[in-house]
Image (cartoon, rainbow, N blue to C red; front, side, top):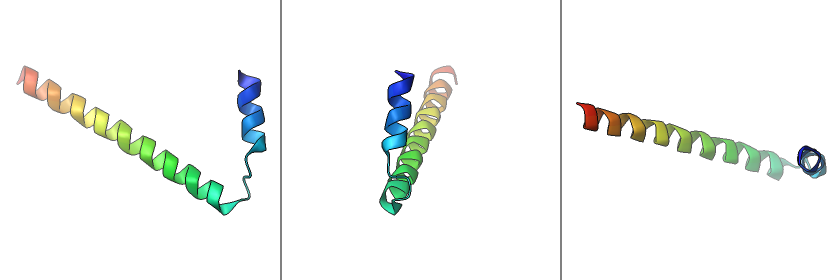
Amino acid sequence: MRGRILNYLRSIQWHDPGTVAFMIDLVQIVAIVIVLILVAIAAIRHWLFA
């Protein structure tokens, strides 16, 4: 599994600006989703145990 991931990472065209922009977008989307989940958990806890 690890070898497949490393091969995939090696095959990515890192010097391609489109790939870099896509990676940045992906990281931002993941970060936003995590923040939303954490906020939702905090809100539900506050609502349940207030």
